[in-house]
Image (cartoon, rainbow, N blue to C red; front, side):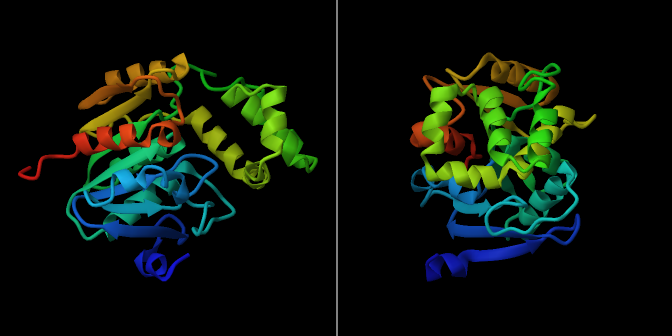
Length: 271
């Protein structure tokens, strides 16, 4: 970490349970908070940052249990709502746009109900089941729990990438050769608790009324399109934008395209 990075970082205390949440700041302009998904930290956004720098004030947070943020022995997804709301409260702007990927989108939706400073949401494929078992079979969570109980995190991660990402034996063999596999194996307990949260997630009875941009990869599995349709029906001010030729990993494959969609969603300077 450079001295410039250290100077831009702060730790926000979550009102949920006192957990310290790391948040970095860079640039100038409208405030934009980036919330990552599962199995990654704020560095997940690295490919997109060059396409946003110079246009906005970028805030990137490590969700609890990731990167430089703390964690607690008890987990509840509502703690993550409070974490995000606390980060937004610490931003010295009256209006903040929150951009979230995957599981981070569930957390951002919950946070929007807790923070009047969240004025816009951009959500890239939050895995909210439009119907039961849309994202994984009901046996996945018990299988991962059993593997962890016998100390086999590799088997738990294998079950996860097989069911959720559709990886086959050859794919898994290649993954095991990468350093990221060991890092992901260490994250399996956090991945598991987030899967459990996905399985039980429900939108609030009164969803946030702020403008919401729903981003969908044109090549993503149909379950994501079902989620988008579900959210379009439930959110009072939501619009859908499809990114042609992209999937769930467009942050890596097409960062400029994702950045352009986010920047176009920001309010005009006169707003």
